[in-house]
Image (cartoon, rainbow, N blue to C red; front, side):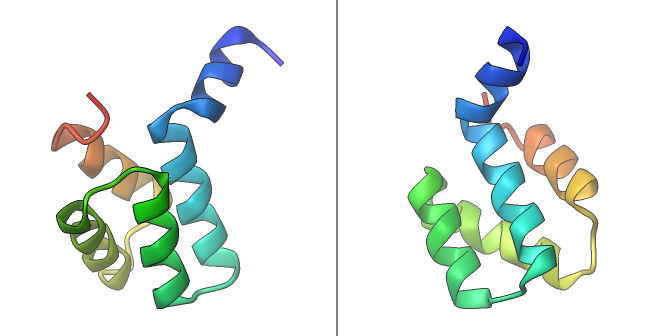
Length: 73
């Protein structure tokens, strides 16, 4: 595993991405909210992310939107 991959795995961005990927394998609204909050997103950020999930966006589209909003800065 490269240093970049290791940093992504431990960063907020990497944790959120993995959580979103898990949601697509096993959709559970309560679990996704709890997991995103536990990973470090604020309650407002969690709600925005869940709304994006309900709009049938892909993980890549959601991650791009969150990056644009500055969630991972």
